[in-house]
Image (cartoon, rainbow, N blue to C red; front, side, top):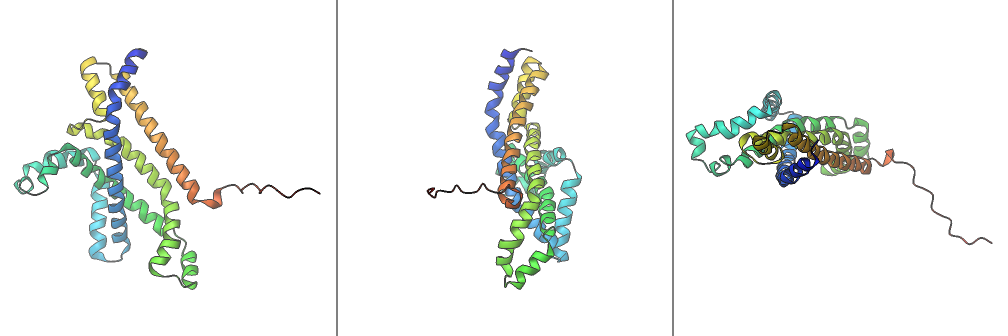
Length: 239
């Protein structure tokens, strides 16, 4: 194992980390808003809202992310209506095409996680809150949302980790991030193992940090799972 070459690979791949993190953060944050909207449409009971949400989830969960990215980046450009629209300055840029594919994909998976969290709220707690006079937004803010967040957080944490790994597909649409820089090193040195091993280590470190952050947030939102706090010291003077 050539440690000097590994160190050189690391230094050449590190500049791609901000692109990977930016793509992940933007896709996950906007995708979460879209996922909440899709979950609300699924739970609305209105057929005109339910079926479009079902179709989105079916299409983006049932097709590979790589194909979705290719269709957005390479496929939309063949339509004249797209090339003359106000969206064309964005759709011709690889970053925004990759973002669009990742966002729409994570929204489909995230909507099911959010919907499952909302459906997991015990009916008894909702009824008890209503008996205490809560209703509408106050009921949602104090009872439904905290419980649904705790139930959905582990699954959504996994989705964030999957999105970090999915950003590696952005290199296929000419976007230079961690995997793209590793591929450039391979194209000039033909040393596949070392370059991809360094890239894998970087992804592993990023996902480890995300997993620990999600675990800490889950612990903070679940006081009933924490150990009992230590008793306060007795500060009274002994007589």
